[in-house]
Image (cartoon, rainbow, N blue to C red):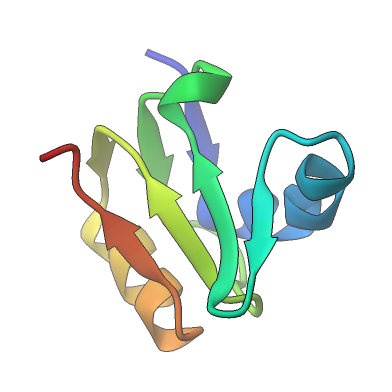
Length: 77
């Protein structure tokens, strides 16, 4: 299962938007990690952007950092 750290996702979020692999909306940057082949979001690094992340699995630390930056996790259901 491919993984990515929350801080790395924050670093590349604008590039993903530019490449049309994520969508920037009023509430933040929407990223579907499953569509990018990533199955788990880990908690290393700093998150400063509001990221709305769809992902199958994540660590508690990743969830905390995403939410502290005014983002959220979107469930599959």
